[in-house]
Amino acid sequence: MTSVTLNGTPHELPDEATVEAAVLATGAPGDGRGVAVALDGEVVPRGEWSRTPVREGQQVEVLHAVQGGA
Amino acid sequence: MLEIAGRELESRLILGTGGFRNLSVMAEAAEESGAELATVAMRRVDPSARGSIVEVLTDAGLEVLPNTAGCYTARDAITTAKLASEALETDWVKLEVIGDDRILLPDPVELLAAAEELVAEGFTVLPYTNDDPILARRLEDAGCAAVMPLGSPIGSGMGINNAYNLRLIIEAARVPVILDAGIGTASDAALAMEAGCDAVLLASAISRAADPVGMARAMRKAVEAGYEAAAAGRIPRRLYAQASSPEEGVAELVPAADPAEHGPAHGLR
Image (cartoon, rainbow over the protein chains, first blue to last red):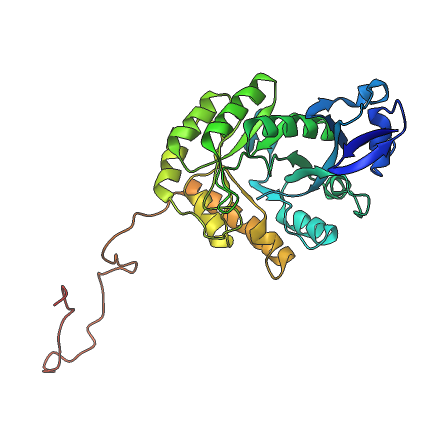
């Protein structure tokens, strides 16, 4: 297993997990529409999710749009 | 018509979506407001959240304008803008870099740094800025597509606290000036437009009103009225009255011999 911090909470991902697996683990839609990911503070473009590994101890933020502003 | 970075907008009211009780009230208010752009914030995915704000706004005919609310450094704001661009497929961003969590005023140093970087990366940057003419000029020089000075702190409902600075910003700007934050009620929005703002961005005044849909309608009218009044040219302020009926031909209705007869008074004693 790979221990990561997913949206601020400790989370176990399978070995050799990718960003894609992390996105699915948050309950975000599978196609990732409306979702963006930062891995240790760096944006990972959607096209690279399936081939970007998530390593032990990394911080994954999976964001979407919510109500906000002014 | 309002033009920002080559994009034409019929409505001069931009809606912030914070504070609505739920998405259906937001959608109804959004339609009533006539706004074509609505801000959204980027937050962690919440699997328990019901409904997608982007779908609701799109169905109501609005486009989303992501903001960087919650960011306190240029670095965080730049990353958030990039994440929003990824998620929402837009290169427009309402740039917010806050310097204090109690008054929510922008941090001018971080704001300018973030604006410069995002412009360099090809973003259309709409910065939420202090009501400071010099900072507004620096943001415009940095290539921002508009400047968005606050009327007063976010959610305070105090209206326009520094009408003089706002006027200086408007006079100098060659990009649209959008009053952002502080609007409390319709007259505040009308005043901003009468002062010469190109548009008004507000949320709380509508979303936290007792009747958000009613207030959305009032705000639409206020922004239109203020804009048209500014274009129509107001009369000068005078210390004394100026009669609006003819002073010639007033009837003499008191008998000439009446001792109580007296003419109009002049001057204050």
